[in-house]
Length: 409
Image 1: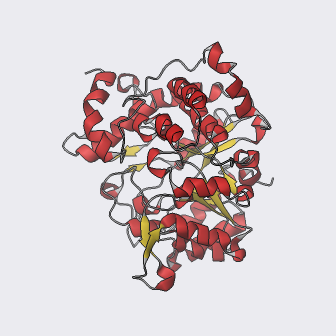
Image 2: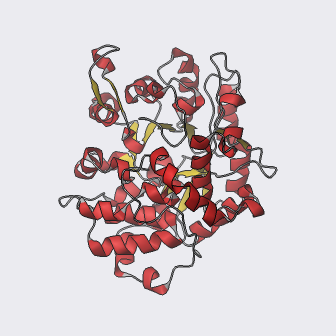
């Protein structure tokens, strides 16, 4: 069955599984048009606005997932549930990610996904850079790998080698589970190999950031100066998450108190949790409230950052996004990421809804909708550059992520 037909058949169930509340105005399937932009888009006056006051050499996207299925010598592991229709919640999500990355199973998902990503980034101005994410496996309390509980595994060595093929365009971010027996040794090895940060997604990897068992890793990480890019808030991109509490933003106080530079992915804009400052059963608040509490803590002014990937998804267009735009005092501590390939999951974004809520106007909505059909990375960047709410937009420095991620050599 052809990919476009298959994706359309999955559409109805995907609405519920991906959390979209509105019928997607961009449809269900990424059209994957040629990355060469038409002249009308490339020279559009809005494109000039997108790049106004921006030095492309300072633009580093810190959140680019490597899409793959392990159908090459990459070493990628994909849980069989992701490829079995008997597990529809997992299966549908993975099929959407494959489509979002314009990967073709007939040509090999690993290879075709990487070719598409290469084409997307080549369309950017010279100097812009994209940081590829490795992803460690699920580990138990004794630090042992359990692939049956891992959604996927993206080896550090594979991502390192991908980035090294075109270092002017790509960097890489390692992933090390802190409970591994060799965690500190692995950290130093990846630092030597040029990693720019460490990536965690606690709910998917079974990491408790508040555990004392992380302390030795935190001490070593703080010494390197590399930041910890860590998901906070609830996780819905992978089905069947059972331990959402591991994504509670207040659990990040521990690495912060150990002097680790912490980048909070998505600014914790998903889900709710108890106010643990008032006890384990404290009143429930949005996770973003706890992120804001951390941002207001004077102890962490120098080592806490927020990252804005995903904040323009259709289910995150309320108070958190308005606050991020309005809090101009936060902007020096914010940085941009795309969470690629999610900008290519068509139901997750709605220009019609963003226009209705006053973030963009009709002309911007039309421009962005067309741009997305060709290059989802440029679409994500342009949307964040153009959006406003009651006169507030993101400062240019939010997109100059190099200042936070570049290593002192």
